Length: 100
Image 1 (cartoon, rainbow, N blue to C red):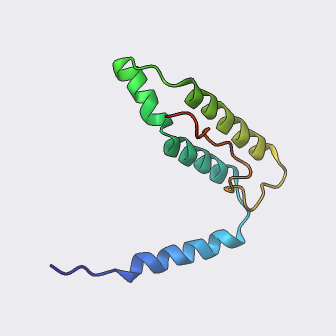
Image 2 (cartoon, one colour):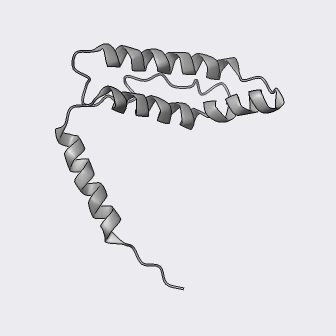
Image 3 (spheres, one colour):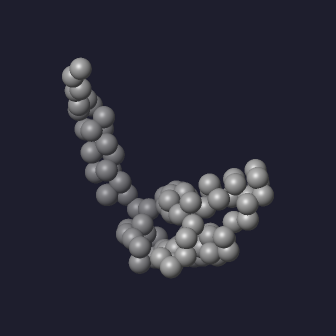
């Protein structure tokens, strides 16, 4: 079996990235980054487990979700959202000593 890379998708992504570099970040961009970070932390999976089978969500995840929401709200209130809004500098991280 042979696999072939389709360049159409790659070139379209490159064009979109070029456009994104020249436009100012918007509130929706910040919201998407907040959702991405929540998803990567395991928050959504833990929340589903809590509702479905009653396994309590770790308090560290609840606290992280509050911090991420606060950071997103604070950035959205700025007159000019920083171009590097997705940098770890602006976002809280889950403490490495806790498990999600």
